[in-house]
Length: 120
Image 1 (cartoon, helix red, strand yellow):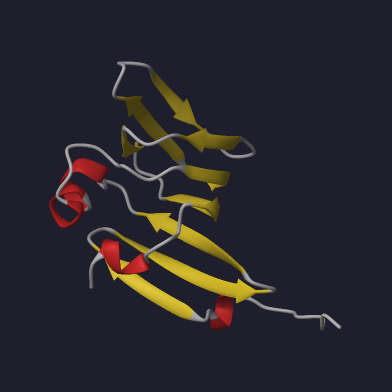
Image 2: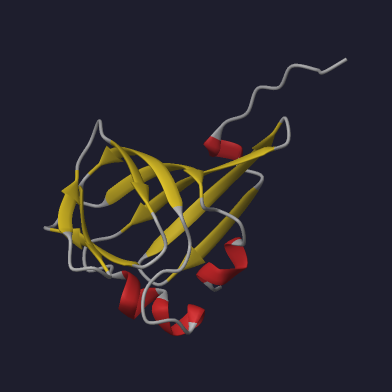
């Protein structure tokens, strides 16, 4: 019989810091969810790209946007912004960055396969 679980990001199962950001992970019922924070000035190709050693992000992300504005540019040239209250799917092949001076916080529902890729 499956048991109930109650978790909070205040006492996350794992926290990883990376350049200009952090990811807080919760594991419950065989599912991993992350709250990811990007500080102003963060950009994937300068903060994560050197660690991943790929020209653009090669991970599929599915997230709910909580705060701030995230700019996204796909490898095909499509560009858009993600804002609070929006649900986004980003297939592999994208760059992303914080727009403006407000930190970006997203609830990552898919895409947190290997938090070690975020660095120390």
